[in-house]
Image 1 (cartoon, rainbow, N blue to C red):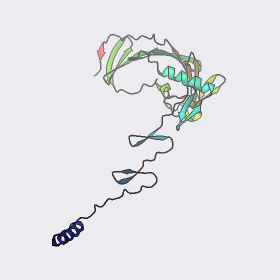
Image 2 (cartoon, helix red, strand yellow):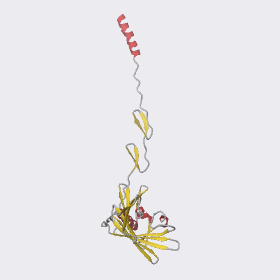
Image 3 (cartoon, rainbow, N blue to C red):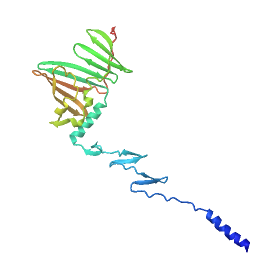
Image 4 (cartoon, helix red, strand yellow):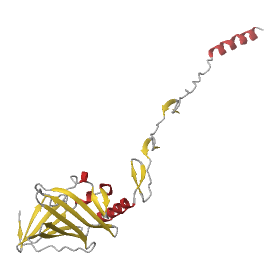
Length: 251
């Protein structure tokens, strides 16, 4: 009997020494939250037009048709004239071998100038001189032929003055009678060649054919004098430039 009483006394003591393990309940997360390792973390919410990629919000790529362009994330339809000019500009800007036959008309005076580009060298030629400009490893060399004398010098590299049409876009123009006129507000934005002194560009037009620019015309206003300069593209892909034999080096 005593032994039974002893066992009965021991059992409550043992039970009283055992404390049930506490189990923490996971928190209840709110809207736009996710439970990660027992912690509620705010979800990344992207703006309209974006998608979540690897934790970052990235703009969703807009795929427009061939007759549309992307403007502020939306596809905008282009008109026929806009499509024609855009395509012609893209084709022309992709050409690095061509000739520009330039005609400068000042009243009764007509001055021809030839510009040639072969992808490596630029050549300027008028009645008095021929200038070749080449670029090699960011070093530009200018070779000049004047009065049968050939001289050469290192010159600063930079954008050529005859690359002005590379900055043109289709939306800068208005079509009138089959000719694209540069809108007046853009006339001051383009660094036109031969624009010197008090000259002001009063009009600039582009003509298109064979899916490229065929001719450009620049009108310069010198106050009492109006000068017209035409640029005709030719010899596309077949222009060749041969450098002259050097007779003098200018340090």
